[in-house]
Length: 111
Image (cartoon, rainbow, N blue to C red; front, side):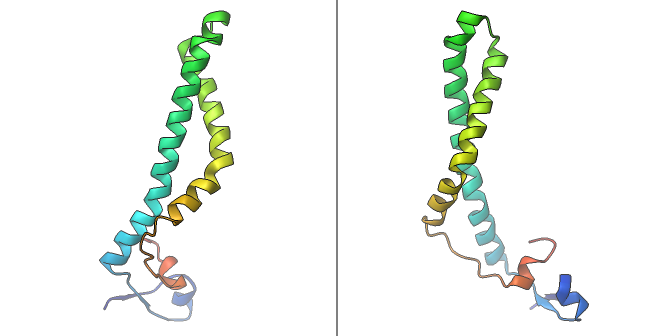
């Protein structure tokens, strides 16, 4: 098993076991799922709100389509900040495998 030095463990001369390929895959999946969920949600809100603004205020007040998209992005950002915790809790409930990394392994530069 490969051992590496990292962070405070390196200062004490301790060697940290390198995470296995399976642990790295599990970490990647657990980290990616909330980002994908947030990205889908963010874009759905942005497109829906931007289109609604373009079809109403854009026509009435002469906003460009790009300005309407910008307003849609603002609305999407506000919703994203509000619902970020909900998206993360939902992804935790999916039951994805925990890579069971130690604190020292989490501090490795490539983790």
